[in-house]
Image 1 (cartoon, helix red, strand yellow):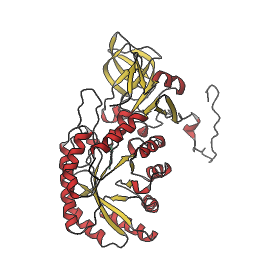
Image 2 (cartoon, rainbow, N blue to C red):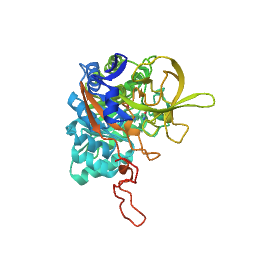
Image 3 (cartoon, protein in one colour):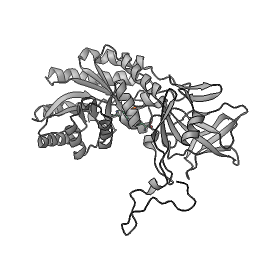
Image 4 (spheres, protein in one colour):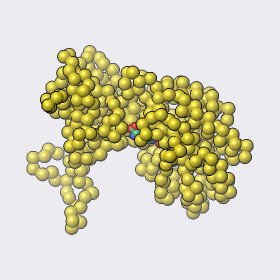
Length: 429
Ligand code: LLP
């Protein structure tokens, strides 16, 4: 359930109309609903009631500081996969003992930052990385709390680009090599082997793969506990899918939580989740304005002012984001909705049925809160969109739209001279 609702034929984010937001902040603009963020986090907490747990929201899905602060205040910890994400987590004042650090290619300096901050644990994904973490901890004179991300070799049945738990994937330690890694870690003076974790993929729409993965990590945890490894945490990653269309029917958080509890509660460990999409996906939309309608040879194109640089999921994964007109209309017609970027893949939807639209009308792409803004770029020299967080009747600009001058910030002439902020004649600031 989310707080994007129609009132009098117009789409609202909580108590603010998206028309008002577009007028105030321009387009394209990402709009997030605070009440929805909080609700989605709480539903997960409730789903795990009775099981000691820590929900570490996966920053990668949407790293806006206001989103992180909101979720941290609601009771989430955070999952960071880079030095940049760790800095974001610390910037909003989250207790380091509620931050976990993962990622397949952590650099030495990123490991150092994590250990200096004193995060709950670092998930390691290879023997070489364990050695590196041990060496950094020794150099700093601290004890590194470490989890091993095992690859449970479970088919998550999702898009191949976002499946991570198969044998052929680059992620995790092969299941049958993990025990040796714990033995090695137990022999290292500056390392504490505190957890076992996994992550099998994203946008998973049945509970089966989670049951299989939880069963496998639970088996691993039991073996490790029997070997006196001082485990305190068992992680199951993120990946719970969301409905992108009305016909999608992923497991509810309650069903998901119950399945995890059955497999993991008997271990007596703290269950750590790393959900991203299920918390932020349907807590955000992308508002865009129709630039023009163009009748092509055999179809009608609706050209909007958001492009694949703003929301790349349709181009990259053939993802479908429901498209709606902000203000209801009649006279439905089929249209292909495209952006202005010079690539045919800059297409949001082929032949969808929409109310008839004209230049200036507002459309929204639903379910854009996860992997939307964070994957945006400046391709075609397009400044990145604004982000607005709505709290009841209050829309707050939580990231300014980039300006044209931002596009060349940091660039230098061949002689090494910085370019100033002055815009060429004819460009509005
Ligand atoms: N933990 C780990 C180790 C991950 O790799 C991921 C996502 C998550 C947690 C969070 O997964 P979630 O709950 O959001 O499914 N850009 C793609 C999704 C990539 C997901 C990468 N890893 C998309 O737009 O669909």
